[in-house]
Length: 193
Image 1: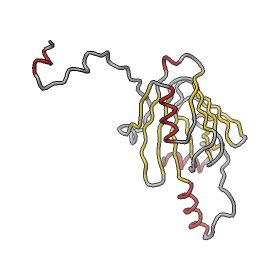
Image 2 (image 1 turned 60 degrees about the vertical axis):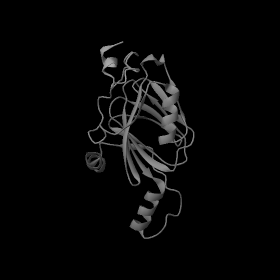
Image 3 (image 1 turned 30 degrees about the vertical axis):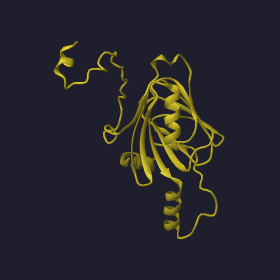
């Protein structure tokens, strides 16, 4: 019997197992640091958890999955969510049909090759991906390629644009997938985020 068990008020049943490694993300924004949504080293569990947050999809690894660890931090303010996703290793995220939201995926480091709305390009720290609802999304992440995701609910954005324009939209709202973060407007927007 260990000294801790003899004290009587400390539960020592779980102290015999080895300490679980935890891979920490380096660039989590301060506003999200204490708001971890999940951490897992299982590819299947990461795919399931991401399906809850974004839309049903899956993750595949390019190489051996021994170094895999997925982390997501986030906060939600009414109809806008700010999320930080880090898959840590070279991997592919596939979502056949996106949910009812618009997303701005900004790489914090590294690159991700993206395919969305029949448009292929490389997202990096100066070029973000903007997703539209209902389309498919495939992202091939490089090693150490975390991203900041701003998620805006579709209905909220439609209502905002209707109030701004004074009339309803005549068709579906679809954004061009490539967002240049070096333009003057984007620099102000990026600094505000």
